[in-house]
Image (cartoon, rainbow, N blue to C red; front, side, top):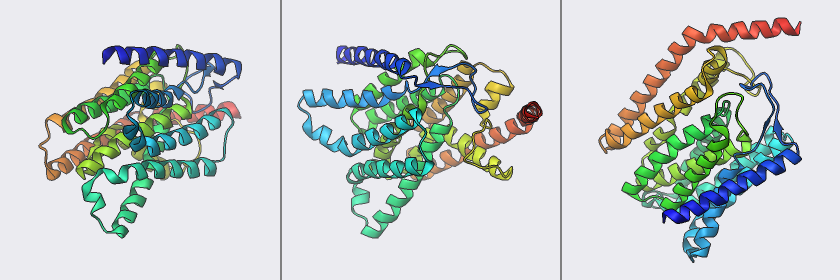
Length: 349
């Protein structure tokens, strides 16, 4: 099997290099702005390789004659192509938020449609409970997708964090078998290929993920977590996204307290303060987030007793610890960001 994965890695590497040529000719670039943590123009949309990796996996399975397997994943794949297509278009030509949001809900609805038959506990529910759970899941998954997208702000963080989510999912899958292992492996290969060009110090990245990348990998990770939740009936497996979740949610609350427009660009995430105000290296900040999530996820898999009560205690306790760490960090260093904003206003005058 290893040689098949090696061939796939070569194919994905060639696809990424081909995209760079297309992006360069079509001027698909990322110019720095007030929210950016970079100061030079970089190719945008390199994260398109994430969705391409799933297409390669699908073609591989079809070549093996695994039509039933591919059919079971078609709603997810169609949703992935839909959401990545609109995200790529938004990377090239900005679209209204309403258009992107409608497509997100449609794509996520397709994903959930593909998940519905994966859990006996769900199929046995009354239709009205299925509707309620479906609507809640739809909102949560779209919200989680946006949080993961917003967290894509420095070199390597999307790739590093994605690996910190996908690897524990692969380990959990070997114990529970909730998804095709090959799909997770190919997705990991896609992330590693992207890392070659993005997991670099500030100023040295060849490309950025773009919305097509951050939203695409979010969609893939959420689908895998959704399959795990549907099989076990245990929503605490969302712990695999806890570090991003705490940072994203706490930042939203912070901005609401500051009476800011949530639709405007900002640099208030903890990782942005680390990178911009504290001048920490992009790779260092990325490793803090990736190792933190990896520790939380592996602890959940290997240290937490396999009971619903223990899972909830672990999730809540880990969330409180991370939230307290976030608040203490902001209390100590947020004044540096206020000084940056003040200097920015002064320069504009």
